[in-house]
Length: 373
Image (cartoon, rainbow, N blue to C red; front, side):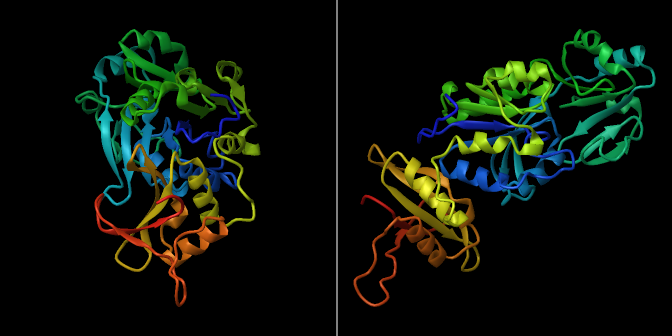
């Protein structure tokens, strides 16, 4: 996959969070959410792939508008489906656990003053001592070391001055050790990394290995960058990360992810509204004739808006229209016309759009043809 690909064949787009989508002040560069919406409207699968814990990933996913789809966190230890209609907002698909006792004991031998934190999925961390605000995502509860070693864990954090020098010694315990600076190590099960988790998602979605894109900036992204057919390092990434990628974009301060996302979709008229731009992008990238399908929530506003395409004689879901959620059917009609997408209308009166009833795939909804039958 080259840097100028804008075909309608969907890709899996794996994105790191910190340093890629968020700067050091936890700000999302202007235009990022809009760019992600267009990538999704083009039919691509956007997958967050982060070293963050689940509790750290969820609020960022919400800010990015990624409330449905796949995500990988804890450096690949957890794979989940995001679904904000679910009570928790997600469903854990796979949790890769290991026995933390051997590596904790070995670390205590090497660095007796080490602080240990064991991830509690969806809540926070059990710790051997106090961690400062910002060091860990989620809540903390101090417990005995014996309790930290009592049950299988998805991830263990080890913090001590110079602890990185013990990386190889700890790997000998049969675990994956990822340095996050000179004084911090993340430990997961053997063979766990972002790439392994992402490849399982790719296989489940039926996306070819050659249709994978990854963007990251950290040492924990090396496996992911090696896995992707098109790998992009952020400009501020260490030399070892930049040398591992196919290409390097600008740094986070220059919103370097934006040109990468833009290269995955056809050029769009900058005068269009976000809704019209997404509809136009979906229609241009669909593999066949397109209909817009919408479903209402409890009121007049739409709870879902998607494009479906006719392919091999069957209607298949092509892409979501993110900005179609929370608007009315009339707003969809207006945006479609603004995007140059005419649709069937009545012959008399106000010449309203001829929406058709559609059933299946959940509650009854309506569809509006944009092209074809």
